[in-house]
Length: 451
Image 1 (cartoon, rainbow, N blue to C red):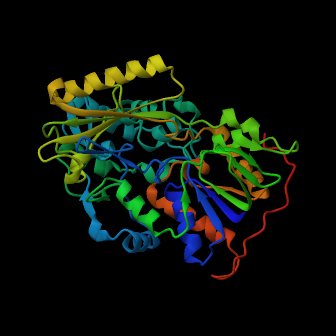
Image 2: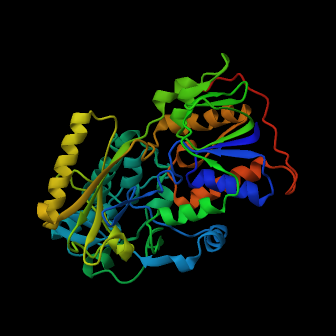
Image 3: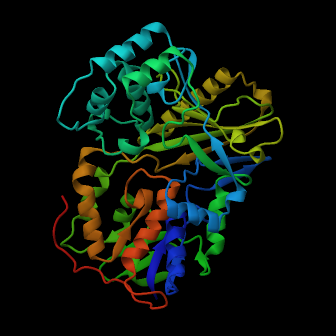
């Protein structure tokens, strides 16, 4: 028996283990369902090419995280890169972000965006839905030509049911002066948005830095351990291989809906009723190795409905080691919510055909291909989530279960936040100084319903 059991050896779970050990706490066990660590921050090495699970870029803004990366990974092993990202619409490339880079678009599009911004509805009331937020922040033109079609593709969900709580850090604001300046001339070197600069490993793709973190963990990492049952009353985890692990406190990074599906809950609880309400889309990540350099860009957004994918990126421009010299390592992404296998296959075939057409790639130039299906991709920030999510976590906490990280907390977050989430969980759990193996006891179980 371990006092603390950690489920999931992605960045958040590894961070929790790392910060436990930093505090001198060794009475824990870490389990991972896959044969390797990393979660979605893994890389695939195939025929001389490196493919990540879509574009995973390292954004370093927090002082602690900066020190963490320096200590664990070493900045000498990372490239610092200034973003070269674009939007392709109306037959032209414009620089990202769209709302300050209208130069080059057809005159009527520019006019609609400026007019819409000037005449946008002004209200003291905080917008409730994403469409309302877009209209109040940017106006009808920007909504029509970028925000609405792009987010509709990426979420694969009715935007009227999506809240605004996720927008703050991820969508740069603008001003009339910026809009007009960006319409009259090509963009200058001003860096706008949280991803204007990023870090990326010089070798081995995104997996490099996560593997470095895993190497620092002194305790064994138990791989190939898929959880089949969590008895939250008796505090026991059961695995598919037959192993049973009692615990005092459970830290889990598995997707929240999966956790709720496998828990054995007391009759006073109603957690399982939340499962169908927790919405998350799926992403199909297709990767190609091509025998020539097809682009000098980092990634491109495709808001228009005629393109089935919402984004395309180029790993070889993140690091030269991601492809043989003169070759390209590229990816594309499209999303869906529980589409049939036939529909997904059709979308994939259409996406590959469109990619080859856009980039002028002939079949003989494709060296290798890899398709990755990501079952949990973008959490849907709908109104149900806004109202009930905190209650779910409160009830889990009452039983000593701490569901953390991007999918454990059911949120949208970066790799930096994954590390900070693991750190925060341990700080909240551990009461006493290092080398004293005590933990914060769980609150008394509550019989309150969440729905």
